[in-house]
Length: 265
Image 1 (cartoon, rainbow, N blue to C red):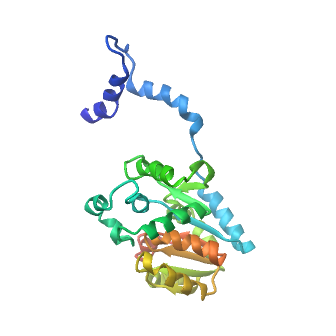
Image 2 (cartoon, rainbow, N blue to C red):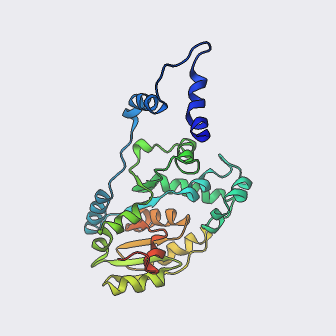
């Protein structure tokens, strides 16, 4: 009850002028009335099916396309020393370092922002928690990123594409490049289902390793890349599209789930 009060009733009480009370009306009702005033600001998220169709068409046409995703790690990486001190992130969110970016890394931070700006589709969190949408909007303002002018989708779009059966349709008959620490294990799983693995880059050692990964990718013949490399995956996937003219999906921990049999393909 106290949490609900602090999160809503206390804020409402601050808006009520002195010597007045608000008649019997619930906080939920007030919120619904207020929501009607901002409903016109709602932004549509691109449906996973629409992205699947676009990816499939891009493969047919040989057109570049990238799908990248922003989670708390990517948002904290973008925020460091522009919105949040690096030390604070190191103290309270040490997972950022294990996600492929040691802070501070200003060159990496700016490269990450540029790749978000250039990506075809950008997955964003739907949670309004502090390090998700609570950080997304300040980050977008800081970098001049307009969600209204970006093709945004769910940050879990990689899972949705797989769960809805689209991944198998995308990969069948295509030359697939796997990038990430579990590339070999994932390759075995996909190969058993008839997927053609034309190349693997089986490790990515953080942001500093991106140039090497891109050089290796450029030497491999492939149609679509699945990139599982933590925060650097955003940059790698976007550059595979913009520099190599291919289709690339920021695959994330879905690679681990498939490789370990937690999800079926």
